[in-house]
Image (cartoon, rainbow, N blue to C red; front, side):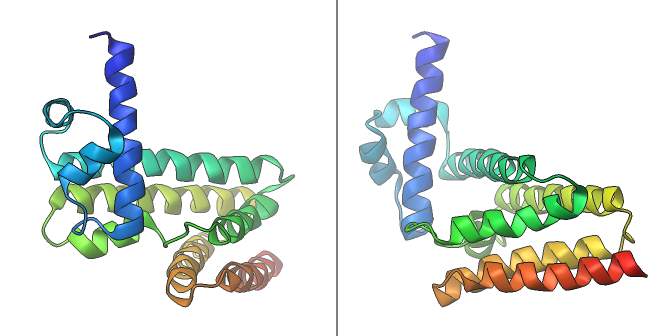
Length: 189
């Protein structure tokens, strides 16, 4: 089988698993269900992903790429570092309004399996650290104190959890308003 076919099958499996895990929870979805949804044989699925844990790690890495692309796209329209920071909350606002929004896949995965799967815990932590570095770089670019970065990251993380639990997108607007206050206070001091 050609490399492009293997990659296509891999993407099919990851996409199907992503939809199922995100909608129903990881532990509620068995590999047979992923096989059926992906249309790939069980033998092929296991040859590409030897365990459910390996599949979940691939799903989370895929989600990392989607998150990074979404944040970059939102920031691309901003004219300065302050606006790029605020674009994070605009991105969240759009995401929270999607019909299939079920919260942060990294937080959800860590909550379900972080204590028993070191691989899942590592991927979830890596994504959060990468996001925190992104925010820290923007804070530095804006000329604000470094202490602002974790505050802004916590606002974004808290908004994701609040929106998922409350079932409303309002948390993004509230987090953005709080970010404006924090940024403006940091830049004026």
